[in-house]
Length: 171
Image 1 (cartoon, rainbow, N blue to C red):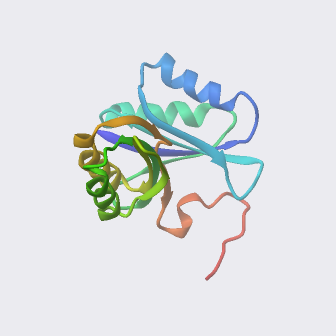
Image 2 (cartoon, rainbow, N blue to C red):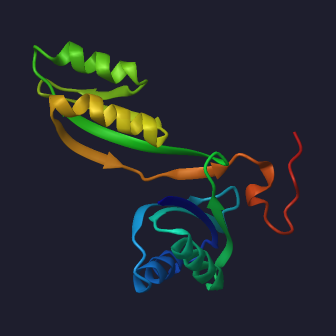
């Protein structure tokens, strides 16, 4: 089963290596990893997608919480979060199929990032369903290259990542 975990960490050198080392040492495979600063430049958010059963997930959370630079570990449950991924694709085109490729791109709300005589570069942002649909639509034309960011996620409840000592934001 696939799990999305978000970890708030102190924004210091070596933290990513320690987190990755923890996963590696325990034999946990990371399917996707995205890291970036939060609204507080001293804190980074790691969004990690892992495969495993509930026991594996519990171990990951317990071991991650033991690391000194970890502030908070959140296990996102289905429906409790928004997730997005950015994908860039280069698709082969010919004069005969160019219009069909453009229609396929438009049908999922993706954008043309660059168009050449032999290929079209496509960009899309969306959940995994949208990204997978785009890949399936374009595969028959010949995908030449794929670059993906990995999943990023955010809780849909205001309190999901509230940090200790930080004021709440009222709407």
